[in-house]
Image (cartoon, rainbow, N blue to C red):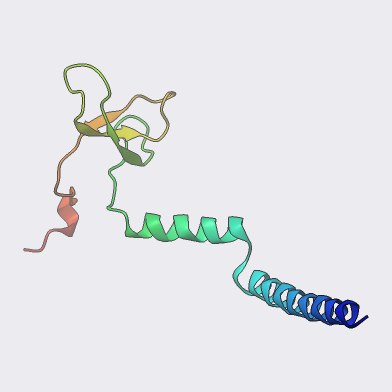
Length: 106
């Protein structure tokens, strides 16, 4: 009988602890959002920290850094259009960002 009462007490305490944990997780979810929201926010922050990319000379879309997988330039980085495969625009990659002439100080 004592063992049964002890088990009941342990089960009730465990249920109370789990209930408070679920309430806390619910509050965190409402405050910070779910996995998708946090992942999306992380992507936005990563894009903000990324280096500026040039625009495609063919279609004007932004370009992204890519690495050649085959051919004479295999392993070298280049700028490729984000509209690929519809647009095959590319530019050579340079370490220093391209600054438009209007931004130069005299």
